[in-house]
Length: 151
Length: 151
DNA sequence: AGAAGTCATTGAGAATGTCAATGATTGACT
DNA sequence: AGTCAATCATTGACATTCTCAATGACTTCT
Image (cartoon, rainbow over all chains, first blue to last red; front, side, top):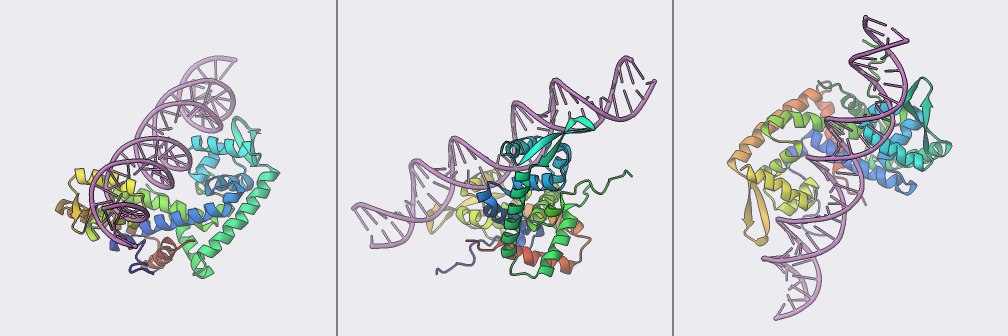
């Protein structure tokens, strides 16, 4: 209702044309949306991602760190938390007694499915102004950059 | 040359199809590239963005915080640093003695132009596998989400 | 003139990223 | 067999970033 309402969040001409700046903002926005979507399940996108890999891959902590690009020391804390809540468990690796396999419990699988549904709903809303084809094209681009091998 | 070389950084089926997860990763990647591109100028993408707005807009600190979506308290520290280096200065707002206008010095403008050129070069390399039209379409999508008005 | 709001600033606390060091264990080499 | 280097999970420290509350100076509303 005021004079300058739409100009609220605009940055600057150069930044508004800067792909990585827009990427950072859109990413922060999407994270916030995701976090809100699963907050009442006691999850954040960070813990959700750990749960997802535990359910779908059940790798060692070291491999989990690689897949999520987190430091192994962060994995310790994240797995501690989810293990305390009975969502996943550390199993012995039968072939290597140093390694711990991170696997989801039945409760973890159930919660993951719920969280996934909510995240997908929330994202559908966020990307609603765009066609499914557009969003899939976006994902393809992001995948290349996300998995790019930089020197 | 090994058995599983390409699978190194892959996350999990669900996460690999999750737009916000891919967004977060691509954003981290692009930031790292940007930071490296301007590291020898003594800048990071964070300080670069402050410099950009100072050069192109020269707003008050409060407005700077809004444009960059940072807390005003962070702006204080960032402007302190760049002001100490002689790249910008705090001017009195002629219409409001509480406010400080953040404007770039000539040295700040020069450094910004250099940084901008490097960032653009680096990004061109990062997005090289994709056509200019594809990348512009990506930017349009990101802009909508970045500036989306969430409840 | 007085009340309420805004601006820059300081300071605190949580979350996150990065790195080094350790004990247990494994794999490679001899 | 036995030694040595590498790997794994863990702990701990430190820097960066985010978020929030409180303050003094100033402005705006009434």
